[in-house]
Structure formats: structure tokens, C-alpha cells
Amino acid sequence: MTNPKYAVFDPARPYFDLVRTALGDLVDGEHFFDIVADDVVYEVLYDIAGWPRVIEGRPDLMAQFRGYCDHIRLQTADKLVRHAMDDGRGLVIEYEVHGTILATGVKYHNRFCSIIRIENRKVAHWRDYMDSLAAWNALTARAR
Image (cartoon, rainbow, N blue to C red; front, side):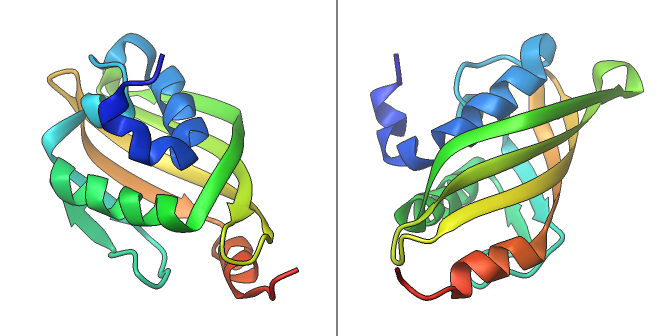
């Protein structure tokens, strides 16, 4: 059952579920926003309009994902590859997401690699890489 306080983030649920599965028992909490530290640093190494390169703190991260969910609905997240490191203090995950750009109906498919540092059973730092061309193509495609 989905926690009602996270209902606004339902369009990104496949991503959140994949991340929660990937982190397994390395972290505490049920939802993605429960497993990130209050002072999490979420860093993206790509330029997408409206998404800052560095997000600091859970409230700002939630605000960014709220905007994401206004524009994209994911149907699935898959092809998870998990690489443990640093005796459980770090994890590298590779995965894909598949969804729809809501304004245009254009299908969105992207690949990611995320490097995650865990402290006190919470995600303390997240560094994200993605296929920027896939995002650009989906976001600039014309409506169907």
C-alpha cells in the first residue's frame, strides 16, 4: 500500500520502487524519501532545464521530484544492476526508466548510473549520470 503522504509522487513510483529494492537492507525506511538523510546531497552530472546540478536536503529534493512528476509519468523502471562497494557504505546502481512526457505524449526511455553513499542507514549522497541525449530527444519531440 502506498503511503498517502507520498501520493503526489506516484508518477515516479517505478523509480522509487527500483531504488528501494536496490538498497535492500542497507537502509531503513519504506519509501525513497524515508531512506534519504535529512541533509542528503543529490548531485546530477547533466544539464536539464529546471533541474539543479546539486540539491541539498530532503525538502528540496522532494520539491524537485514534485516538479518531475508534473511532467513525466513513469510506467516501469528495470534492468537493475547493483554493485556493492565500501563494505555496505556505498552502492552503484545502473537501471533504465520508461515513461511518457505528459505535455506531448512522447515516450521517454532513459538509462542511468547512480553512485550512492550511505551513512547511518540513510542515503547521504547521490551522484547521478544519465543518457542526456535520450532526455533531450524526449523533451524536445513534438506532440503526437
